[in-house]
Image (tube, rainbow, N blue to C red; front, side):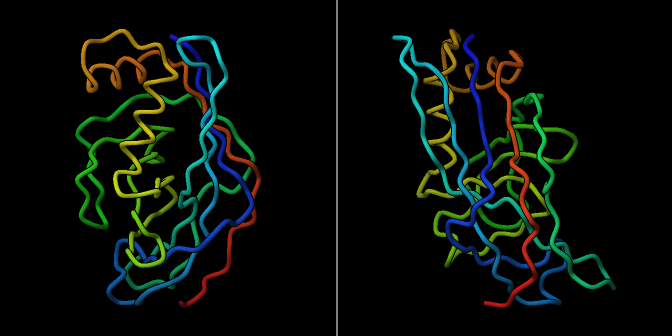
Length: 182
């Protein structure tokens, strides 16, 4: 298995509509920035390949009876991806793109809004891949291309990659954005 590097940027590249998770109905909608996630590694021929994806990095947490606040990983840090979670489903919106990469604990990489300016997803700090339709599927297909996975089907390849511990993610230091209304 070949190594794969993920890097979550710290420069805002766009914006997304979101709501305070998990009690968003009480607070309405918010606007948060989107960031670039760069995926790089070598293909079967040994050539370096790289793709960039638009992602949500921060979210708005709306605990019951408390004031909403921006959450997410802001400090520079790196992690080895722990596992592929094939049965994960997005909690804050309807999505047909299943599964998630576990960074650590409940910090995941999973499907996000196809059009972040129009389709509201909510997050409490997961990296949510946009670039739709099927942006998360495209993301995973690119990871498979870079991995050298030998399993016979897509699902088995994703599990193999998750078990290999050859994928790392680095979050560049970023300032948490202020809460803003659209």
